[in-house]
Length: 133
Image 1: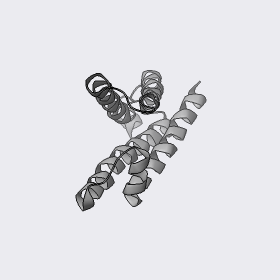
Image 2: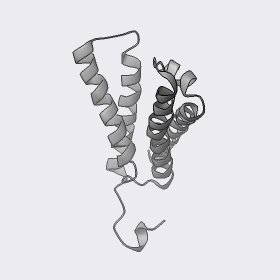
Image 3: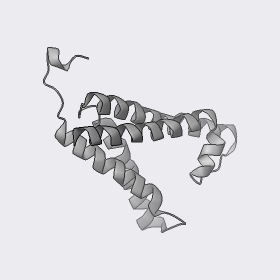
């Protein structure tokens, strides 16, 4: 179970890292895949900064937490994907549906489920020497 959980988290981290680097180096192209349109240089800057930060920080924490089996490190991407899911749920209620509206919510929910299981199975190590990397 631990190996499968680690593998799922690492695979998710790789996908999230690819998205993060996509936003970093080609925000217009990657943003288009997300249904985003840029509004000039400011829009490119926001997408390059905010989306790459979201995905790269999530990927780094997932890779570290999945590799070392550290549940505490996984709280960061768990929080990020939970907030994203809640934001999409609010938008669904307030603004309604759009084509394939369920796809990003399904991806975020999959992250939430896998990360929650991992956090529960791999508690943060006790403070002291064992907590050091």
